[in-house]
Amino acid sequence: MQICSYVEEIEKCNMLYYPHRNNNYIWKDIGWSACLEGCVKINVDGSVIAGGHRATCGGVFQDFMGIWLAGFSINPGSSSVLRAEMSAILAALELAWDKKLTKVCIESDSAVAVHLINIQKVTNHPFATYVRKISVWLNRDWQVSISHIHREANVVVDSLTTHGHNLSLGSRYLETTLDVCMIPLWADFVVLWFFLTVSKKSMSCLKPSLI
Image (cartoon, rainbow, N blue to C red; front, top):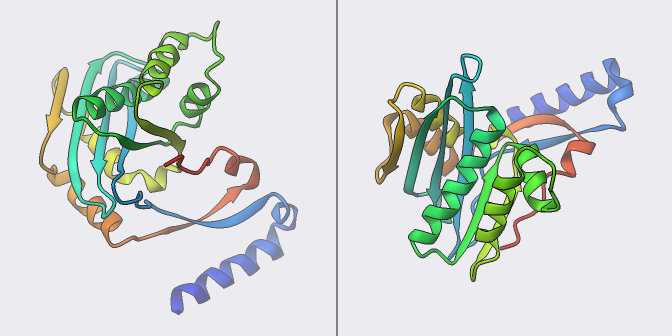
């Protein structure tokens, strides 16, 4: 009740001091949401520091109850942010297929990567090769959706990729939860939400799961 009161006060302040934003922004509670039973959710992320010389990407597999099923961490060395994000999505698809999953929901906080993949009509873009490879996986005999989410709903894999910068080059398959992921994983499990003011325009990127 007290939290709701705080939220109402913040909304009033926004309307009072930022009236020009009233028609363009809305309040939305942001947090990790469970997939349907029988489906596996894979949250992916890419991260680059030190001017692109240290990149990492990863993914976290969770069931409909938020339980950790598996994870992966890849440290490719030098890369761009978009390449790292695309690599995470591609690796998630490959691993999900190897694990014989039939219903998969992939979420990424890279709006650019998700947009390029969903429109699929990319020819002259520098990452057209990645889009084509991902499209081949999507066209296989299974149910897959790739959606954009806010970073605040992607905290488990974000902590994983941040930790990945401390690891040596290479790929790692993670059967058990890393210590750095325990607190954000717990937060997902008990469904803790972030209250954010988001642009209505940006909400068009948040497509519902196809599964």
